[in-house]
Length: 419
Image (cartoon, rainbow, N blue to C red; front, top):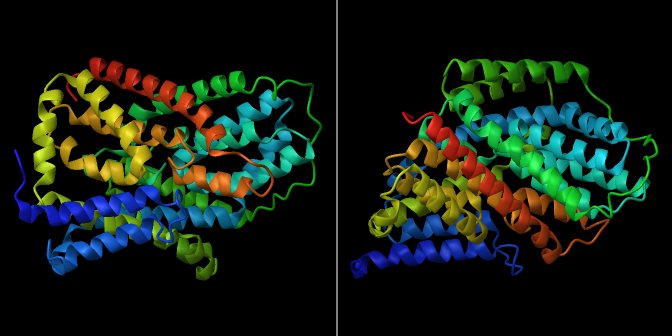
């Protein structure tokens, strides 16, 4: 079966866009992911694949609004000093090198589930570097632990990372429903991550008790933090009662802007506007690809391999997602496979597998997730961690945690066959 020649123009635009997304940060491209996606979206409109009015309509504003509301709330938590305080408490509580590793793995992982993995990495990395420097500890094991744990922990909830937000909204999951299915995946993944890192870096982690670390900054604005905790509690309660994800997120975001009494300029600087533009542009690019007929063609080609039961579907799509996520990053990979998942009979658990595998795949290489790049970029000021040093560890972590995740989801599908 061949596509009509006229349909190859949007396919070429799509492939060129994804190629630019894939090589960003690999070949010193002056176009980052956001710029590449934006140019691809404009090309789809200029090439008349879809008119400008249709481009506005295909943007999933629910996802954009949801992310914006959560970013505003997280920005206020950051200004309050909450993340710095947590990081300092972790550093001060560690008694041995292994203890410090365990505290870092589980603290960063749990926080990433609710405050976005990128934010946790941005805050924790400087603290980890200061602590390892003062205690004369090898920093590599802790840097890799922070990046991998933040990714694994973010699997747990719709607020953990952008691709989970897109999946939660597209699939219509409730907040508790998503959490109930993927919390076991995330928690088991964190345990496995600690065990693997402890084994791989066993020489670096040997040694006696650590000295007490003092003098780390941990100033907290208690009044602002109380307001943030109130706003976050309101978000969770309203989501539990199945109020709209985006409506709750943006409403509470507006509320904290009013009651937080923080200068708006500080908050605007903390919002990842580039990520929002990236998402909006990708919706247009992928819609153009769908209109080319290529999506339908690919779905028909994949159908024989996806006609099996839920186990076959989970294994097939999770394997494809691990590869695809490391070629074009996890967010574009999820949006690309979204039309395919919507056609499957067992899509409830396939959506969950997509969320888990796309995020866990981010640990494979330094370029697998933005969280990795944030950690490595900041860490480069104090220590050198090469592509292959990270990948040798990340590949093992990815294979083991993804295998465990799919195993847990297969078990859940057997326990709850009606979903």
